[in-house]
Image (cartoon, rainbow over all chains, first blue to last red; front, side):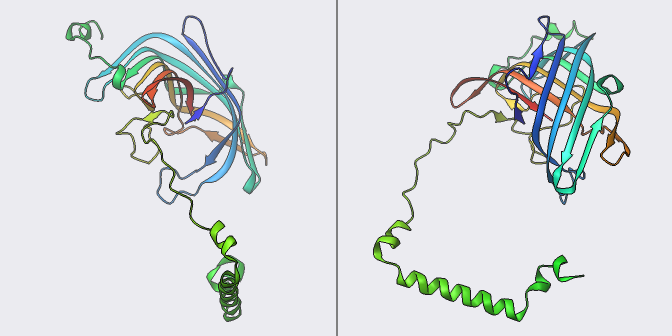
Length: 127
Length: 137
């Protein structure tokens, strides 16, 4: 998890589009993750990622794990480039429009001390 | 296997001897140090710390299967990696796309573990609400 620098995340006023863009983020390239013997190498990554909400509403509510998410399924597209200096490797994706994600969501969440269980009647309104 | 491939095979009798001499020399030097220098090497007093007082986000307690405090994105799965959090979140996974490496090879990207997300809002840490924006990449 990395702190997002100021200006790196832009969310539209209606909350239905989010753009996350970061440059030269230090990461670990670990192709065999999550294998226990996965070797990690220092790498640098730049990327731009856009979420656009669809009209499909979601509510995930789990009183046992104390979290609730309300939002929308979304379409997500990514463009990125990665450098692994120690092995002289770099890679750049095709433009943003050429990618898509099988799963994406965008919304609001509360958990832990901010969580309050929903009333049962509220569940009945959600398909 | 060459000597450069295996550190242990480089450990010859000659290097063992030089190592032993090095240790012996260091021991001799320490015996010759003045009391002032020896005092400088004394361990510092233990620093008092307020544990549970950090302002960093607190991870979701049960999400530590791989030691990275997160889980793949998916339906009914919690998007946030921060516990005691309220704010805007987004997650995505299962990317399908292509790219090109520095040798001109076309390489696809995207697996179930290729997931991204952000959390922006308020979280509770250091016994007080904090504000921040974080990404998982």
